[in-house]
Image (cartoon, rainbow, N blue to C red; front, side):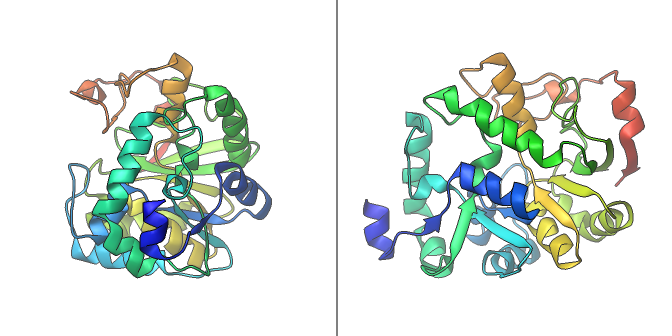
Length: 276
């Protein structure tokens, strides 16, 4: 493939199954790099997160990190497009060309990376028979565990669905929906205070990539879980496009205003322990 010839090597990015199996077996913390994170390294922001030089530098730091209890994830689509739909294939082929400088500078041929798209277990696939198997493993990560969920204030992971049905307990730290990195110290301190002996799941855009790394360094188990709830909602609906989900912020959906709807859910309100 052109991208492999351009780099001079084929990056070792493990599959979705291999990534999930490693997390399940080793309880490693996870930092994921998609186009949003890579764009910040390229000094480009987006509607979800403005360019921030400090965050860009931290993302570069994490990308070349080596911690025994932490893995760095890149999109597996960069090395294999098997079973991906055309929309996803075209996106990543084009993106590699745009972001080639980042890959050439930071990706190391002797390193092992894992799949950043393990949280996106539904929409990208042409044959969706694989989705149930991925979902079972994803739910197995937190099944039977006490969970601290750090999320944007309109993300509302697991609300009005059964994504976290099998957890022992779930508490939430609500953070700004956009530019959360501006409150990074407060968010980190809350995670340390309330995350002891818990699995910490972080759904906070590019900030989650850095936070999961810092928490791993501090001895916590933290996973940048990204869009998993939105993918689950699309999976439940059999969605053919990236549709809005009422009451939740779906940054990839067109004309997304439904997140502003107030939700009536007592369990959700009880789960909130901190608002930042």
